[in-house]
Length: 160
Image 1 (cartoon, rainbow, N blue to C red):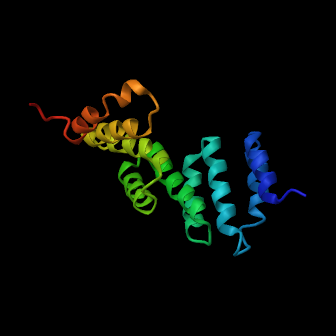
Image 2 (tube, rainbow, N blue to C red):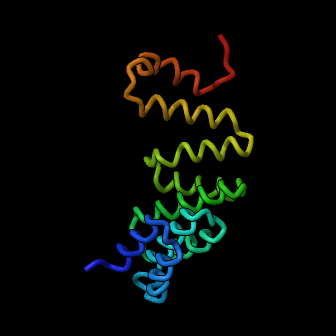
Image 3 (cartoon, rainbow, N blue to C red):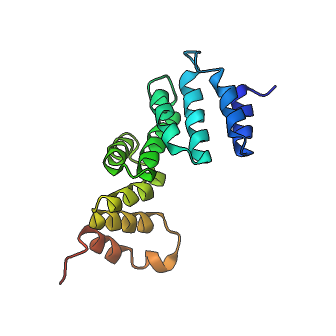
């Protein structure tokens, strides 16, 4: 038998957001499941394009018992949602927290770089993206220039 979580996820994937959230709201009063339900509700709102409605649920998810992976998802989701709403300083704070707690989470770094760009920290954004490119590519033609790219990424304005 499918759990309410599985059912709600399928409904969300089908674009049936209200039905998905309706199932999840049955769990928000259960102390053991509330945080997980709020995380799923937040994703539902984000997927539907109702980012403002997602924020409260990300925060409620972070206040309850969730796994480390779910905590990452909630922090990263909250940071990304604030960025998409143009609340860049708040987003930056949550990105900083996300990367401090989950430094190996490379999937958060492009979004963090976008936020850095949004607040005018262009050099940091480009440097971060260059380092990410070099450290994650399988492209030999990029790997051939890895040393030079990383050197320039440290200080994009430096000349010789």
